[in-house]
Image 1: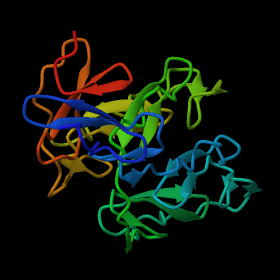
Image 2: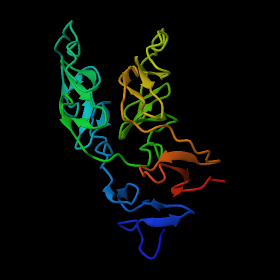
Image 3: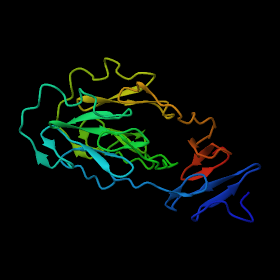
Image 4: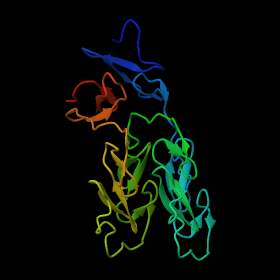
Length: 256
């Protein structure tokens, strides 16, 4: 299947099996079953959110969720205005399943895959990368990384905070765990994060939303391969939808 014409584009490396082929797009800047799709830029790579703000990437830009006392596009403006008694997220301004976060006296939306814009009302056709944004692990100081659509979320250990767990904090942990009430639905796993929590909805993206309460239709099924020392990824190919990731190389067979 890899000759006489290599089906892998843009310098991708082709591996044949008995019934099909798999393209390894590592290092090419492209992704997809034939390395034809440009890998989306991680707009959070330069950590544009200042003063401890958390960065969430979308297809064309990024969104900063600022710490108390800071606001603005990159959390550089101080605010001394008394917070309103009614949350700006109460009216559910984020559409199409987007999650709303308070940002000073206003709000920011973190959109689901396929949506972008201030209130998640604009569609995007950007292809999600086939390799997890948690590889290699961007979360420092033993933080745990979880995929969040095309980006990632770090759940930091005690004493650390920030988008990649690089900021030391002396803030005392809350006396009652934020996960004690069981906010994560449909089998989601709850992790304490500062004075709040984060729900990990699982690797299949079958559910989404702040509490894993939204059913995500049209998402791919869970990988079914047993990959030994590697792990299974979704290739996006109808001929071979699953493949094993063996280190930094995608293989059609089981990793040993």
